[in-house]
Length: 341
Image (cartoon, rainbow, N blue to C red; front, side, top):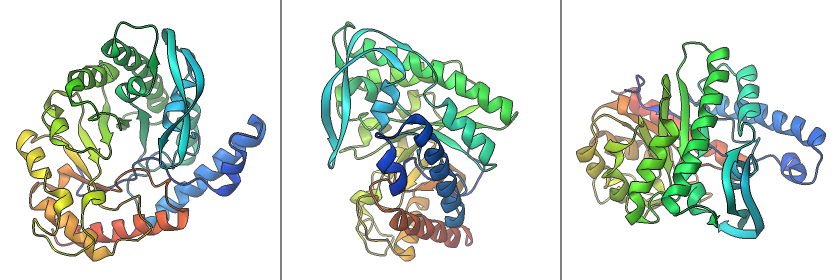
C-alpha cells in the first residue's frame, strides 16, 4: 500500500540544460561533473516549484541514455556502432562477447549527490534486465533468457550497493527503485523471461519499494496478466498518449484509460502510477482535462492510495519550460481532485 492519496511523481528523465548538453560528451570529466551537479540542483528546484511530492532522481542529469549508461559499467560488451532508438536519438548498441560483469556502481555517485542535496522523497530509475537484453546483440550466452537473467544478476548487485548507501544516509526510510523496461511487451511470447529477470533483479532485497515503468505498449493486457507474479509493489505506465484532449469522464471521453479495468480485475494489491500528461506533444493539457483523467481512474480503482499521478514517461523530449508547465498542471489537477475526496 502506498500510504498517500494520489501521490504525484516524476518518472525519470528531464531535458538537460543547454550548458550540460553541449559539454556532456565533449568536455573532460573535471568540466562535466560540476555541470551535472548544477543541473541536478536546478532540476530539483524546478520539481519542488511545480509541487511534486516524489522528485524522482532529479531528471537523470548524471546520465545521457538509458542503455549506454548501464553498458559502460559492465565488461563483456563490445560496441560496433550507433543504432537509432526513437525519434532522432541514437545509442551505441553492444554485442555480448563474454560473461557480463559489473565493474563499479552504475548510479552510486548520482545517488550520493542526491542524498547530500535533497531531503525530499527520491525514486531511482534503473534500466531493466529485459530491455538491456533486448537492446543488445548476443555472441556468448545460450539464449535470450540466459542473457536477461545475467543482466538481472548485475542489477541485483547494483541495487544492493545502492541500498547500503541509502540506509547509511536515511536509516529506516523506504528506498524506492523504478525498473525501466520499455521493451517489456515488444515480444509477448517472452513474458516468462520478463518475469524471471525482473524477479532476479530484486531477489532477496528487503526494505524497498520496487515499481516497473513501461511505455507505449500496444496492449498492456499482456503485462497485466503477469503482474501478480512479479515481486514488485507497483507499475508506472503511460496512458495520456492514447487519450483525447477533451473533458469528460465517460468511456468514450477517456479511451486511453479504458484498459485499466482489466488491470483492476487481475491485480488488487499493487499501486498504479497513471500517466496523465503526454510527453510527446508541446501542448500543455488543461487542468480540467487532467482532472477528468484522474476522476475516470478513480471510478475504476476506488482506493486513492493505490493510485500515483505522473507524466507518461520522462520529459526529456520537451523543453524545460514546457516540462515544468505540464508538471505544474498535473499537480494542480491532482490537488483539486484530492481536495474533494
